Length: 488
Image (cartoon, rainbow, N blue to C red; front, side, top):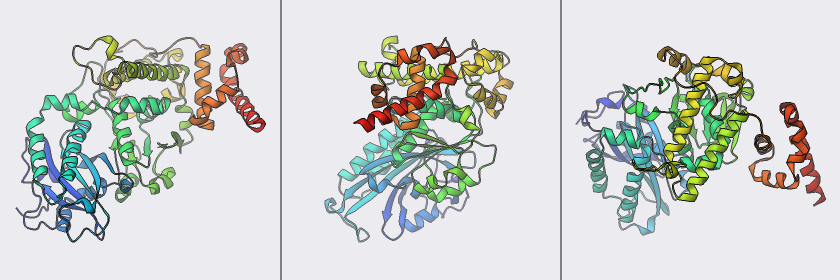
């Protein structure tokens, strides 16, 4: 086979049209050349198998693949994985890379290009379907077996994995596997109300950057957020899918679960009206966040940094929104107690062990989205306030909402927030905790609440003036904490 010269890879002659798995790669790090393709199956270049030539044989728009497969910062971790997309003539394809390190003195066969005390490589698969968690589970087994053999020159295992995946995968399996996300419940527990804020930022078609030190965590958060949008992944597999509610929403969203520094230009060249959800781990992205994105979520600090002033009002969570966050958090906690947290229930599962599962979490966000769509279409101001009127005004102008209105001729569900209701003391406490978290950090919130004593007596007379009162109350609380700290 001649060296590939087509600009995009779907025309590779060695690729069967019906195969869901397109390619498997072995990526290594060379002390002089950097990250390179060391092996590919099916072969992308049968005339020259040198790693430099294999990298050059990649289609032009796939040249960053080695840098994605061994992402920025991966040398700080013994093992990990990232998910990503690659462009094609027809759209995109989906990749998973699992990487690992081994001490070079453990190897039974050491080539001359191994000059360091550790060797790091990744096994990377490219699929036509976005079945990320399924592929991670399979490729992790492969890379563990590959490293445990201690001979990194033996590539038979990669060939076996490629054929095994193609023999296993069916359309029905892909449609079921694409929504599974075994990290979703943990992310809800860790980031709580920030998940809903990011969900709403994506709905507003804003440019959202997820930054973190660990590439695995970054790409998992991006794919987890997308799994909250009903039928998002299923529609990437079967584009004809649409349900009676007009879902999935049509979007212009640019999605990249992990983007290396070499692809920085991708963000700069996006169309102005196009939203994005992108994961990065290189600090240079964070340093330029104000020019690259509207919102940057920093995973280590759990901070949502807003770089577009008008978004502050739109992304404030309403009382009903905070109730929704509490509902999800408590559902996940109850699932944890029963051992069903984050699981995928069987067809015979009961309501009891369905609560807190992946499908339960996704169902709650589906209900939230449908109630939002119906409420915006209905236009009742009292109902819209439950979603934050500033957010509603922006959302009603988005491409996805306009397309939904065109495709759905009538109200599909009863308008009204899924957690609507009168203000209670519990709501006030949640507002205080959220505002205090944003001001002093989540690690200090429990200490703050403990030192301010009984909140109920101090705020009960001011419930009716909540919005005016809340800011001053938080300020007073922080002042009390500072005085108490100085006394200590």
